[in-house]
Amino acid sequence: MSVSVRIQPTAQVDKTAEIGDGTTIWDLAQIREQARLGRSCIVGRGAYVGPGVRIGDNVKLQNYALVYEPAELGDGVFVGPAVVLTNDYYPRSVDAEGRQKRGGDWEAVAVLVAEGASLGARSVCVAPVRIGRWALVAAGAVVIRDVPDFALVAGVPARRIGWVGRAGVRLVERDGEPGGWECPATGALYDEKDGELVERA
Image 1 (tube, one colour):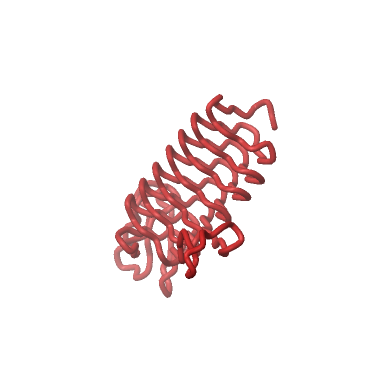
Image 2 (tube, rainbow, N blue to C red):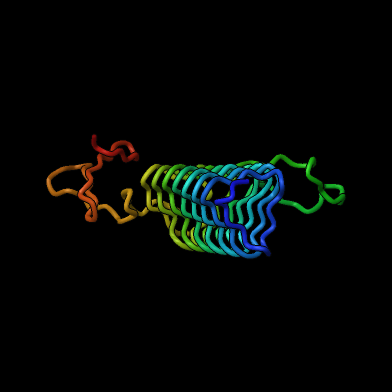
């Protein structure tokens, strides 16, 4: 583990976990075996990263975020306070005969969060699901289906209510340009077609 990694004394980091340079892990956080965190990540107080989870560079996990295996988070992902990424589509403590289920009794499924996406406070992503690049999940939303790139989703269950750009600001439609969108913060332009949004070159 690099000397540039900062780990608070009350955090639990398994010796098999890989922690990238410049990463900070705060009090009471737990990083399980074989987890891999990239460079310059921030893991907040009480956050949990499950066995084998893959996390890119410059990712922020806010306080008490729960990232269960086999989740994968791309570079620049933001996970707000108390967010939950689940891993069992049919959760049960016991099987149909009443016997307690163990690790080998079920198949873990992943939440995949692509580059730059943000998950608002207390949102829940029900695996298996993919959150697209630079998408924004509103606080308290429950995501049960894939979220397109740049989509703004909210509600229970979450549905698309708009588009956002890389700055996270809601895009506005361009006058006289059907399917054309613009970021009021950066001026970046986007085109919508068939329910998808792409950046203009």
